[in-house]
Image 1: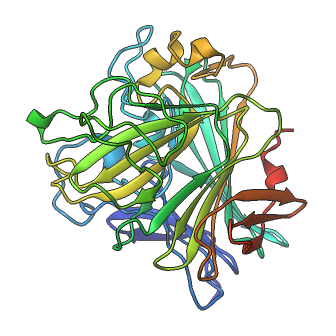
Image 2 (image 1 turned 180 degrees about the vertical axis):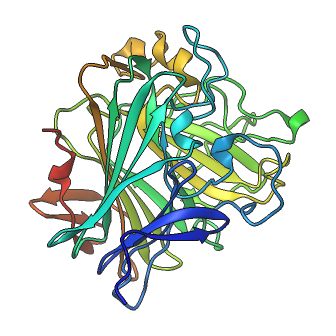
Length: 385
């Protein structure tokens, strides 16, 4: 019997829409629009499921921010951040209504070589409609994400919020990125030990490489934040900032040397100049965290850390250097965000990314040892019409 598109299932406690093609299957939660689980390389011998699903999904519910209820995979935050400070009379929920409200199904369809899911949400704190489209292309181990914000007026930060699962082996997940202009640790104290939280990184410090980030501990050498899991008992935030560069492709890759796969994400830095890393390694002990979460958030967008709409929209140390940390939405014309995420199998010994090249319809990621991984992906999707 032919199944309707999309399938509707309850996955890890959350009602979800499910679509798939020859290479990829993905689920998107009705609550918050969180994308996970996602299986890449499903047509081969080594399927890849890179995303994290929070451990409290099948537990008795307790009070928590709406965003955290389905917490998993990737979701879109508008406005991005904690949003503790009101902005011009608006008080937004953590990561905005888009990350914790109930979305509506618009349509799902299958064309000759593509499968897509389209959902929408009407926002109320700042009136507007947000449309999200997830597209799969035959032969591509990638998800093409398109978000259109319609009628949302005023300044706001925004971001995708991908969360990867950590491997068991220490430092088996290795992170590589395209060049960035500025790197900073969190501008204020991140963790409060009185609340059962602990941070490892120095406050408001500069870095040029993820492999050398200043520690909070005096006399300690810079810490390596390019390989995970590491430093159990701590949680941290650090951010890379890029200068807008036309249609240049910005990339990040996470190589799992334990299972031999590589997750990647591609963006246009003119639209999303920020990349925030949320490092969680059993560093929060209050409910629902309970000292048990080990995951890595890779959050691409336009924002000033997770400080919310107020601090991202006002002049701050990053925007004063000419790097946007918010966008000013006019309401008359839609604002569009495009993002590509995917995962591919890699050969043993492919342990780093020294360079990446993007050709029509494909990408080549090369290691310092001369090995290369070539895969189908359309980076031209990132160029806005």
